[in-house]
Length: 170
Image (cartoon, rainbow, N blue to C red; front, side, top):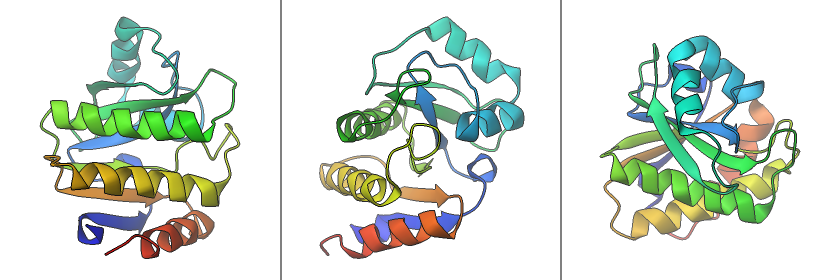
């Protein structure tokens, strides 16, 4: 299981994967942080698709095209309301629902950021544990996803996810 979960430090918008995950709010407004980077790299088509989808529930995930990026899709993991905070439950649910959207759309490779750790204020070490556990559990359940990569910004995030990865059972 651990072999299908990877870690890298870098810019998620440059990942050569089928889908990247956006740390989204439930209004699907691409603002700052990861969402802002996706908006800049992917172009206006992503926000236009988000506008057509409209508001989703906190803990849900929606999928759009990826505009001008290498990825085919952006999966918007709504772990918070606009201007709100992320909870362990909303992080768990939005991660799980992102994986379900990926499976529904035939995604084989997907990259996640550290959802909710920016303006939403969720603790980095707890985020790493929650997300790593959800991904590992999902991959055990017969998913079509072949590789999940956590694309992390900064050494602190990388170290937190490396520790959570190392603690996964074999």
